[in-house]
Image (cartoon, rainbow, N blue to C red; front, side):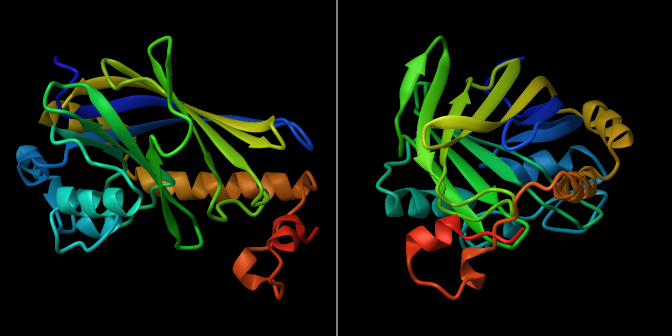
Length: 265
């Protein structure tokens, strides 16, 4: 199977917190890897999968950036230009969660953007929070380096994602090109020191009805599991007395330094 083909990625997600207390967990999961220009056709492989319609699994344009009435590539071009990025003209693949029984929550989706020669040029990390907010982190918007076959970049945190993390943080992404295997590793730094990391390790399977059905029966409601795990781990952190940071929009201060450091314990 060519690496530049749609598919299903299965594997694990690991989170590790080192400060102020240790905390870690690993969960099995799967994500789909879709050629964004072929999504309506890709959704026809199974009666259990739909495009913009309710089903056991479905892709809904409302779940991603921009105006859902516009083609996804057009929305990416608009967002890229707004961030000073020229979107390459080759294929674009989206690594994401689908909707399951009408429900979807994507902590982060990745758009892998290739040139016409098949070289990976740009990646967009589309981050969503449980507060209903979203941010686009474009590569090479930060420190882009290629080392040992992986793409590295850094970007300052610009959105309140977890109530257990302050705003004065920096993300350090390390991504391998999606081939038969895929790794996304993210360090979260504060004052240059890593205190949290997350690692997504996945293996590719073909985009066939058999693969999809097997995966659906193994993980029948993937995104409900994702949101359930987020809240369960948040409860564990709370009982470990990890400091809780108030969302900046709820703070009656205008000094960014105070917003970054304010907390409720």
